[in-house]
Image 1 (cartoon, rainbow, N blue to C red):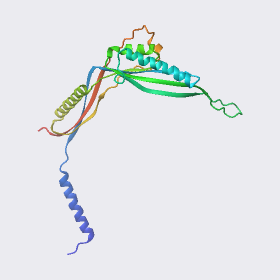
Image 2 (cartoon, one colour; image 1 turned 90 degrees about the vertical axis):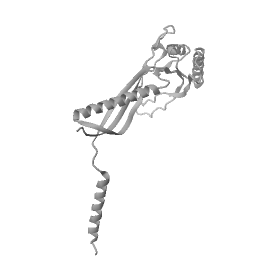
Image 3 (cartoon, one colour; image 1 turned 180 degrees about the vertical axis):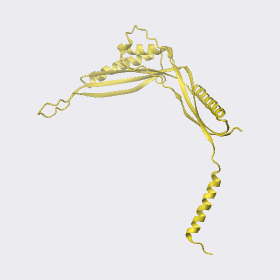
Image 4 (cartoon, rainbow, N blue to C red; image 1 turned 135 degrees about the vertical axis):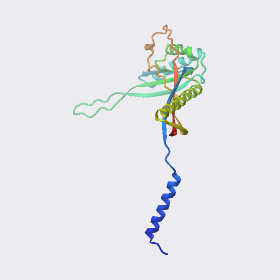
Length: 246
């Protein structure tokens, strides 16, 4: 017996639809809850950038002045007992040409810019666990010629323990919120469908803004910097399958 092609197609489509429906099964009721957690601990290391920026009419003059100051800064750091490479290293050296501003005069061609000088900068990055020396490092560096300061930034040498604590708190808060929601809606949690850590990172500690040496006062100011607290935040999202409590 021959069936029309269109009828055969309809039968096949109906069969496929029935099979797909059977494979998918009943819809699963679920709820998604996000918990937040944080953990705080005293900073265990300090990082800063101490540098020198000088300008001169000639490149040789600018380089000589910058290198003299830079060498003095390195010596000062070593005299404080800091280890080169392990606790400080050169993070940047830059030479920039300084140009005159071109001026437009009425009814005349634009004047070409001219080189009027050179700017040379050198930066040393310091990262150490000797927290009590933070202020001394800044002062000694400035006394040695540093005139461009960034930081200090406070952080942790190892944040794994604090990270685990924050994640644990976030997960517990998500579970607690989920339990509260099911009690309020007369449902219950049957299983966990999915979990995700959205974020578990150190909250950046706002650094002191870039400064010139005079902002810190004279060499006799005995600058004291109090170690900052460091916070790790975490967000944990859990998807629960739920069912009627009865």
